[in-house]
Length: 124
Image (tube, rainbow, N blue to C red):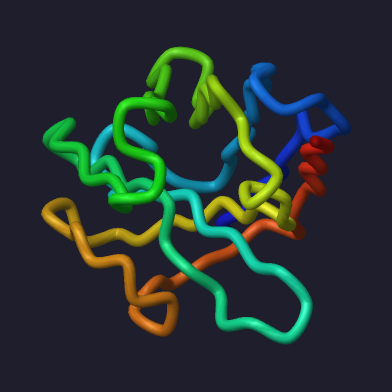
């Protein structure tokens, strides 16, 4: 059974940094595609970054150059390093996983498994 547990969210001032973690269990992280999404109240969930089973990464334009997605196959953990944070980055951040190795899509409904989310708040 796939389980994803996010951590590392919190409150930070604009310009600061946070690193989110997603502890995975129940599957082989090295072959899965994994991603980070975020959502604010009243808005659709949006893709932030994807890393597929071959290590190919994709980023939303809004976070390019500021966020870095990575995974540690040994620790079975997905990360999102977020630098130069802006107030508009405030959201609940979700980890997602899918058994398709080459997935790069940021369409939420196409992803198989989800974590419970972690809140990130950036103040100006």
